[in-house]
Length: 236
Image 1 (tube, rainbow, N blue to C red):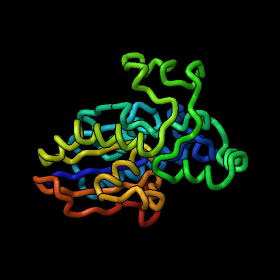
Image 2: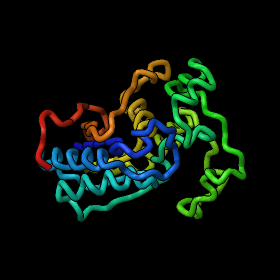
Image 3: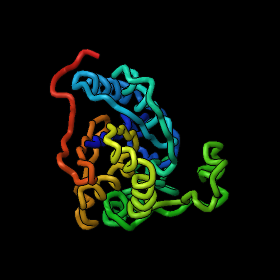
Image 4: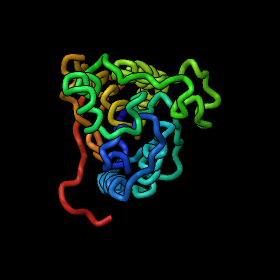
């Protein structure tokens, strides 16, 4: 039976500062490091043997996965990174304070983008240095594939495509798979796994550092899903 563990990276510096992050490669804050250590200890204490790990290209997700695996003393497994698990690209809102953007654009347009399905923030201009094409991490990719902004629907398309291409084949083999990603790429995967309609997507919340676990049978029928999180103060 395959087991999928989805974890949103620990808090980053921009999470704490309430800034739209998107594809900006912001590091974990100390609180985020602690969240990853707690997740790793939970995996170790529950004797969960992870077989393979996936993450996005962004260091907050990569470091979260690395800390989890090191804390759980699981260091010999394959660790695969894909840009398709990146956070949603927030376009011209990236690097801006969320409260300031909300005041500027108004409540309804703001929440349509933040919690809706098909709305997106204004796109980056092609010469904006925040464009992924200027980031060396993406130099091997076709610049036409790199977004200038995304809706959750756009994010779901790439994340779910990668889920079926790379992650499901491992689950079918009965492996336990850890995926360290982001609030919106995980929301996208959850809507697919749990058959959540677009009209209900605004209700899906993904907490940082919490282990969301899905158990499948050999036909990829979901048998159980639950969260594994800190129930008391743990010694890391």
